[in-house]
Amino acid sequence: MSAADYLDLARQYFGPGIWFVLAVLVVELLNILTLRNLNTLGILPREASGLAGIPFAPLLHADFKHFLANFPPVVVLGFALGKLMPTEFWWIFAALTLGTGLLVWLFARKRMHIGASGVIYALFGFLTVHGYVSGNLVHVLVAAVLLLLYSGMLWGVIPKAAQTSWESHLAGLLVGALLAWRDIF
Image (cartoon, rainbow, N blue to C red; front, side, top):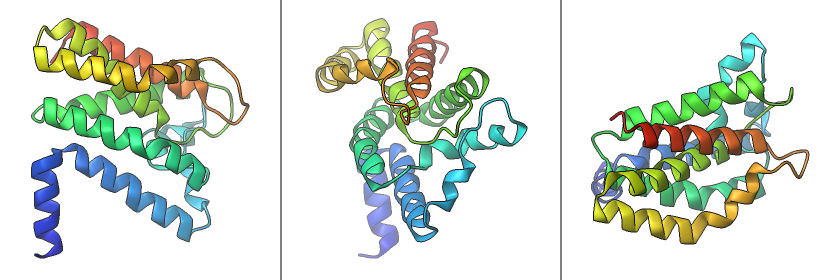
């Protein structure tokens, strides 16, 4: 089997979320090779240059520990959205990423914000609220499993450690929940 065959098999099994997972992996490798210099591409609130960081920030991590903390939920939540809503995946993912990033840019502390956790919280908020409002039994069951797995992360919206972007967590959760609640897809 060629690499293209493996990618096609992964896409069929995993859905379109595989591309986000692969992007996070590839950028992490590049960031390691550049000694984390890519982290300057994050979101810097209320600076024009920081707007460009909105699509890049979810792919960047401060260190390997930060990457390892974010990677499992990236896989699980990316898989869940990709399998539950494969035809809507890209526009939902874009809305969650851009909405979260814009709120961080507008309201967060004046420091560089990086990491996939804002999008993780947005995916979590979207998938759990969508499960509730959809009435689809499979979506409800997935939401229940996600709540069991990840409800503890809700504490992440409370300011604690100075290096943690709780603003990204809160923004993501709000954007995800609002997008699902509005049921605009």
